[in-house]
Amino acid sequence: MLKYESSQPKRNQREVTSTFPSTPAVHFLRKHEVAFEGHLYRYLGLGNVAKDAAAALRIRDSEVFKTLVFSVGSRPMLVLVSAKDRVSSRALGKVIGDGREINECSQRDAERYSGYEVGAISPFGTRRPLPIYLDSAAMDLDRIFVNGGSHGFLVSVSPADLVRVLKPIIGRFGYH
Image (tube, rainbow, N blue to C red; front, side):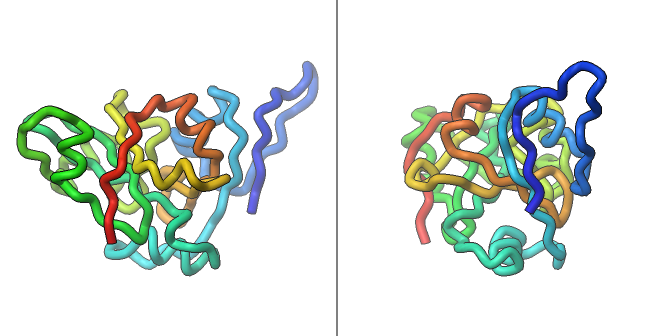
């Protein structure tokens, strides 16, 4: 576990470099002075990325939040839900309040909208700002783990910090 505290280095003092990847997510977190911890694990490939990460890091899958890319019409959005849960399109639709059909994006579109490869999509530092929907289960935890923008790399942050910098819409749309 590698920590980054939000305090800036003093003049003539170099910032300590980390051994975790330098991704747009890490740059975003540092720019917004969000304290986070980096967690490296062995990436096993697409499939159950968030559950695999939880097992590798020996944490509960309810603490790891996967970042999925959905769309309403032609409007993309990020949806964060715990690794143990699936997204209920019906419940998400009620949170969004749009009434149009909600679909998970293809791998190609998810990568195009987010700027990250599938399996490494982070809610931080996306290619362009996207609306974000956070499952309310995150608010019951002290820290949540989300992808850090590279395969085999998660960052843990407090849900309060995530809400402060990303300003997601919070609702209950995960189920198991």
